[in-house]
Length: 71
Image 1 (spheres, rainbow, N blue to C red):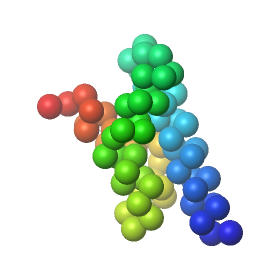
Image 2 (cartoon, rainbow, N blue to C red):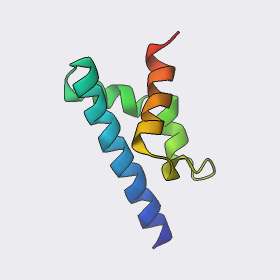
Image 3 (tube, helix red, strand yellow):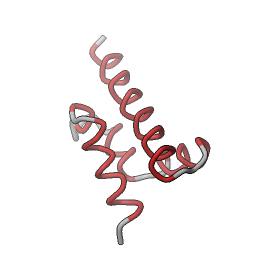
Image 4 (cartoon, helix red, strand yellow):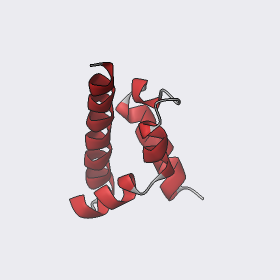
């Protein structure tokens, strides 16, 4: 039961990240999904040891943008 709730949190944040990318960068949903699913941020989000799933979608999005778009 707890694992199901944690997976739900991850799914909700992932959905938000994809939507944010589509809106902010005017890219396709497929491209946004590719960015999210192939990121270190997504790996950390799915790692139950990091507890990143407890953070807001906006916070995780900032991490993703830092990883993917700022050099």
